[in-house]
Amino acid sequence: MVVILVHWLIKKGREEEFKVRWKERMTVPSGSGLYREILTRLDPDPKGQSSDPKFHTFSLGDPFYSTFINIGIWESVEHFDEAVGKKYIPEAVIRGKNLPEAQLPE
Image 1 (tube, rainbow, N blue to C red):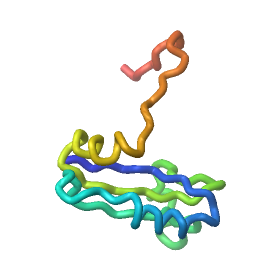
Image 2: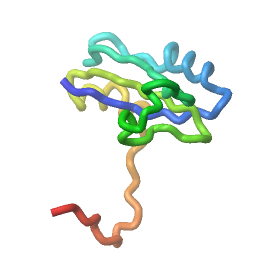
Image 3: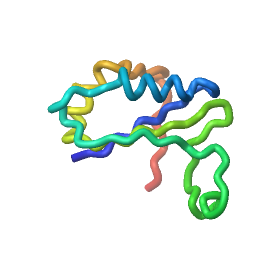
């Protein structure tokens, strides 16, 4: 079992359109390996304890977009790729093949 996170950046003002599209058009057939999923939205103006810096170890937000996170629990990465990846996610393009490799901590 794997948890797949999809980070969506949606133009401000188009959030409702996105939520409808996600619910009605981005569906996965039964038996595809998806156990459960939920679409969450980043609170753009946190108050109370959620604004405490100790709860913010990294940033997902973007000041120009509304942030949504899709959390999916799948049977395997291969099941996700077959049902979603090949349909909605374009192939990665590697640029700068002559660039030095990233330095990793020892």
